Length: 296
Ligand SMILES: NC(=O)c1ccc[n+]([C@@H]2O[C@H](COP(=O)([O-])OP(=O)(O)OC[C@H]3O[C@@H](n4cnc5c(N)ncnc54)[C@H](OP(=O)(O)O)[C@@H]3O)[C@@H](O)[C@H]2O)c1
Image 1: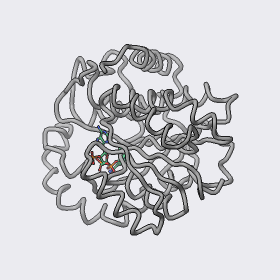
Image 2: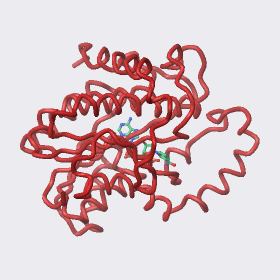
Image 3: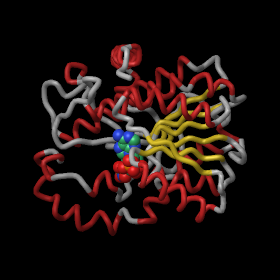
């Protein structure tokens, strides 16, 4: 499908990879809804994207994806603004923490933003997505997409090293996405996962030394010098490639349940995602959070 005239929503799009993704989709003629936590940054991003994309049909909704009451309101507001039809949802907002923190819903924060929020937002937007004749959901993964998921430490209850735990949440998000795509098989909605590749953004600029695994800590000063050079603006543009492709490519209109790498090519899922027990445990945990009453 061409995204021209389509309603596209990108979470975490007032900065970083999400903002660049939204800029490109606006330049292709989409009606874009940005999402960030801060009204000033959201207003600035709207003005910037309207100017640089030449498309005035860019608006923003503020919501903190670590709060389920915000995620629920976001789904309602976005659906209302879009006239009940959302064509593309890119679940891009992501979080990493140096120490274990728990949200007002009692969920570990990185798990809440990276796994529970995309799950709930996609569920709560489902009426608007199914109202589109052909909606696409794209979940953005990250970290190093391999390794294990410790089902006894899903929310960092037993041990917590920021980046290692972030990595686990992204694997958990992929497992949730794989199952979600199965659930959508008989619907007009597709769901795929995109890996953006690295880019120097506020996410990694703000990492403290303690967020890195102990073995990597001695080289953190070097990483801080190298990252802006190696992962500067060109890397940021490259990091939009897989999600813009999945959102707009006519060839992928029926693709569902696939994992695309940073070059926008289908790639095998990590082994742990193919484990049914792992997937079901994560899915049930997400369902439990979705079904809990949230504070007003
Ligand atoms: N950067 C990388 O190297 C890299 C590599 C692989 C994967 N990824 C993934 O790509 C995605 C985007 O990463 P990024 O590096 O662009 O991140 P980023 O720079 O931290 O993203 C900034 C955007 O996310 C928003 N945001 C952050 N926390 C939020 C929350 N709790 N609720 C709502 N919005 C929130 C920010 O909004 P505010 O204006 O409110 O701050 C801003 O719009 C993430 O899922 C990340 O895991 C990144």
